[in-house]
Length: 77
Image 1 (cartoon, helix red, strand yellow):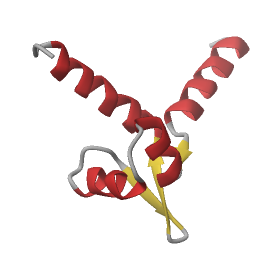
Image 2 (cartoon, one colour):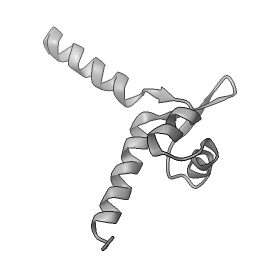
Image 3 (cartoon, one colour):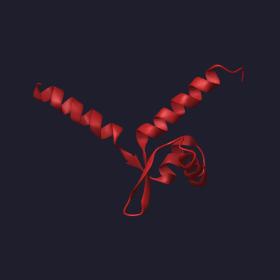
Image 4 (cartoon, rainbow, N blue to C red):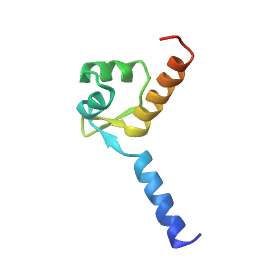
């Protein structure tokens, strides 16, 4: 594996593990932080606690958006 490949792999891991706050997730989804908490409780998005603070995996938000877009694509809106 070349140094460039290792760097690319490292960057991919960092982006997939990027954590954001409830407020940041809410802004991305255009919903309240309370709604984000509900999505976590309903296991629609994945979150972790870091020293008591709830953090959401950015990849989980992106996956949720993709699932919603796929669902909507099959409907007549």
